Amino acid sequence: MAQTQWKTQVVNPKKLQLDPYNPRIEVEKGVTQEKIRLKLLELEDVLDLARGIERNKGLFYGERIIVVEEDGKFFVLEGNRRVTACQMLLSPSLIPAHYKTRFPKASADTKASITSIQVDVAPSRAMAEPILTKRHTERSAKPWSPVAKMRRAVRLLDNHSVEEVAQLLGTSVAQVRKLIRPYRLLKLALELTVWSPDERRVLEDEKLKTNPYTRLFTLSATKEALRAHFDEDQNIVSALSQEKFTRELERIARDFLLGDPANGGKPKHDTRTDPREYFADLLAENQAQGWKQSAEPVKAAGKASKDSATGKPTPTAETSMQATKSSGTSQSSTAQPQGPRASVFFENLQCHVQDDILIKLSGELRSVNHVKMPVAASLLLRAMFEAALVYRIRKAKKWADVMAASKQGKQPGRDPGLNELITFASVHSNGVFLEQNMCKTLAAGTTKTAKVYLDSMTHMKFQEADPPTLASVANNIRAIIQYILNGN
Image (tube, rainbow, N blue to C red; front, side):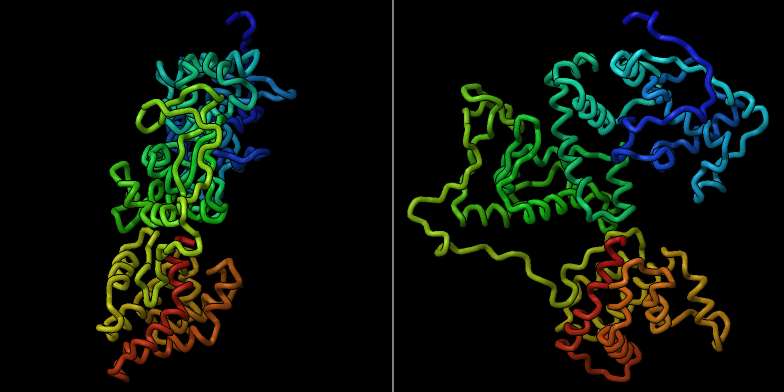
């Protein structure tokens, strides 16, 4: 690399553009600078970095920021976190509203120190890559996480061949390929539209532990269950219907990537999970339908490849993963495996929010036998319904409003009752639920009927709880409870 092609320049950090290709964060195309700052604040400890800059009255000496000029603007290749901190120290108006009270106020000395900073201007992104690699692998800069390394390699492939990326990163083609497949799998999960904002923040965090999730897809039992293989570009290809594959992908992502409050905040499954047990229903369905797992396709006909799970050579297969029926077996006469049963009461209830009360109640409600213990089931269900609404109202920061509304003509200090919670949350303009449908469900006569029945059981006006009626009540309010427990 010819050092003479590089230059040094003094700039105001506010004039610099944060890099949308920063491998530390996952952002969409055309992302705004405001959203990049927010991502870095949420995921990359920029708040602590800003506090350190204020304590030091400026940036630490030793390593300047690296930028590249594109379309007449300087984009930050190295030092996005520091530049973000400086921008907000210099212009507090850039600080997102919910960070303003925590973000440090820059002193006059700090502002004077960071108003003009020296940056190294790279001739191009490609010429900066070897230096960035060394900084984040061999030197003192914050190391890239496994996810950041994957994201960086895949983004480089947009403009370079695998061989060129390997040269830029100072590694082998084989190592680059090892980074591509897991990121493509993670990207598939990220592109699902089912995630709540909190869940998406977890999935986009570069510190996310992805190995249990990505490893699962390399196992032969998983490929057999999903009727899947990887193409030449390391994309997974499944012979399942799009709807079924998407449903399975969501299940896998939830179980292997997202923390489960019922499991101490850790994902339900890890690398010790047996894929044959995990995909038992799919494998049974494949067997019943006569599907046969073929070898994974290779890059070109006539060349051998290796199975990613075993490392053993696999034969050439130009038409792998095709549906082959067992001879003499008719699909219509094949016994179909039973799918999961719908809940009669709350057998399948899951809690995905970190709230001790809801975790305990959901666990007991899930395990109670409403036929043998209808009174206990009634009491648990009413407690769960009320606790879920309280949680949702508090999460929406509307508790003070519902308390104020409930005090009209009431004794001071009295908490709002279930009826008041339902009434308040069912009004869309109160802001408890963003979805009109949830408000309509709460305001429906079926919900009011369920509430009256549960009240009668709670206050012991009727000692005889009726299991069929209790099951009907459960159907009326199950969707509301599960919606809240999903973290929406």
